[in-house]
Image 1 (cartoon, rainbow, N blue to C red):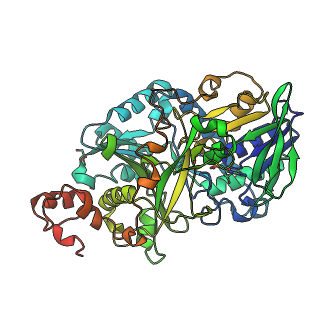
Image 2: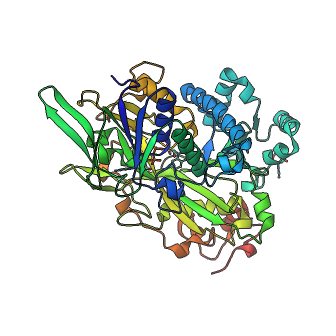
Image 3: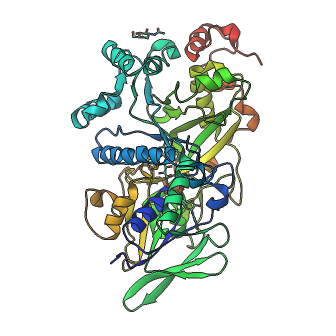
Length: 525
Ligand SMILES: Cc1cc2nc3c(=O)[nH]c(=O)nc-3n(C[C@H](O)[C@H](O)[C@H](O)COP(=O)(O)OP(=O)(O)OC[C@H]3O[C@@H](n4cnc5c(N)ncnc54)[C@H](O)[C@@H]3O)c2cc1C
Ligand SMILES: *[C@@H]1O[C@H](CO)[C@@H](O)[C@H](O)[C@H]1NC(C)=O
């Protein structure tokens, strides 16, 4: 049994590792250590500086709308209180009390709103359901949600403040106003890297020890003892050859989790999301103002279903002038040999900082992003994308987390992962319930987060596809960096139902839909 006297090693210092460590240490655990191969002390969770976990990012969405998954909604609302508490603590600190690069002006959660938008004039079922469930279960949050094109909600948005009235209409110009959705003013943007830095700071204050950076923070292998009583993990060996012993090893390695625990490869899978950036030059104060979180919400856009679906979104501008856009309609896999296990192939993250670095994105998502983003923000089309990133999800078979003992190790090995693209917002709260699972105190999450694997013959969030599935990265064409700009040009030439390259009738409509006033505005080759 894991108790406050247990010696705990956590491998992975992203959201799942940090939150677990914080709640254990604050709950009386005296010996909690986090190992991570990224040197967060120096690189501060900065995705442009050697940090390639999902948590190391400039921003992430905080939302509480979860439709029927009311357990996630409740967890998000519980987290929200702590996010706002953290904001307050930071605001009331003197600069010297805060860890670099935080300043008292930073709001880890900025309630700039999230605009849930979709193609077509009728509200899509998902949004209808989201709104209804919010109304039934958390009416005070439903009061902060404003349906696009609803006159009553128009009035309520204006009552909340003139900035909300403006945000409510921000997307009217797109596709001739033939879009649907709602603005959620109770949600907003988290400063991901700074939030992790702050959580680490709180961990340090609570007594958590960190071993960071290569080679000393990188797990080389689990130290497994095979005795007559069964298999146990006794500790870990790090890349510098050192052994570290503990009573319980918690693997929170995000998309690398099955690289460490091969048994997990049918429970969680690394899949790739495409992120694109636009760095707005400092002489474009007009754009910096327009996309400032006070004036601009996070947005998400859904279009179509199946193969041609679009699911993606974007963020308000950062203080440094960076706009981030994500695409996740299709999440790709990258099958490689398992680093330890013979004959096992698993999807493995590949990033800018991998041994075989990659510094571009699949053309597939890029083309679609150019079309949607070029249409939404014609004012950005000249700047075009200036940078990109592949960011790796850890998908479970049902998008619920996987937080449980790994079977067959006599309760010495525990896995804490499966963020499935929505784990970040829970940073302040997740560990509270991880601790329950560790201590075998059942709660509402126990049945959802239990160890589970792909079931034969059932759709399991793509995990059942394996290496031969259609999402495998080796089958993809990658974009050349020069394709990053301008925003929509080549998407039109390559993937729209084009009957002629001389821009005849269907084009005029298309152009207008894309936000261009006229064909003449379209950049010529
Ligand atoms: C593109 C994208 C967008 C997302 N957007 C949102 C969002 O808007 N809102 C939201 O709530 N959630 C979002 N998520 C989900 C969220 O980011 C994740 O659920 C969460 O960050 C996962 O945290 P983690 O700790 O499990 O993994 P990670 O953050 O990936 O951390 C794993 C850590 O393990 C370390 N590690 C791995 N192997 C080893 C080893 N051998 N030795 C030592 N250390 C090791 C890595 O260095 C890394 O730091 C998004 C995810 C992605 C990929
Ligand atoms: C979009 O449609 C809504 C609802 O009909 C209307 O209130 C709004 O003014 C329209 N906006 C534009 C720019 O046409």
